[in-house]
Amino acid sequence: MMKKLLTLLLGTSLVMGLAACGGGNNKDTSKDNGGGTEQTSNAGDAQKIYDQKCSSCHGGDMKGAMGPNLTKVGSKYSKDEILDILKNGKSGGMPAKVVTGDDAETMATWLAAKK
Image (cartoon, rainbow, N blue to C red; front, side):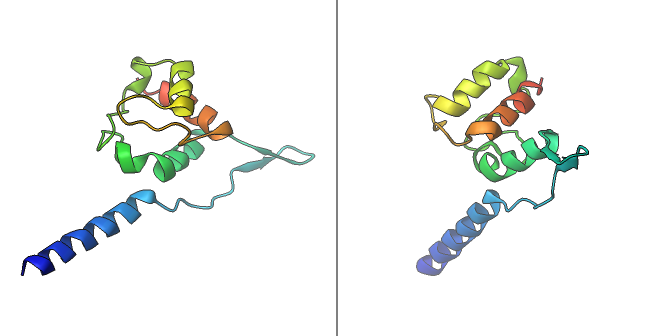
């Protein structure tokens, strides 16, 4: 009986963990600017990045899970401070380089606006 319960619990945890990784949608966010296309950085892009890379620790609603609540992170940290945390991590559990490059810049701007 205990073995079955443990198997059920581990199976459920695995499914929940995989669901938290998200898949995101493959919606094209490029715009035609007359001579080519230009990639846009908007809240939709940031939300997609968050869903794929951050929600497993910070929760789908940003209210925290293993990681802290991010709903008002912009009132505590500036964009540059958030970008530094994304690049270098933070003691207490935030690993470095979870989000990198242009995605880190997009996330820092988006999170800094959360006040």
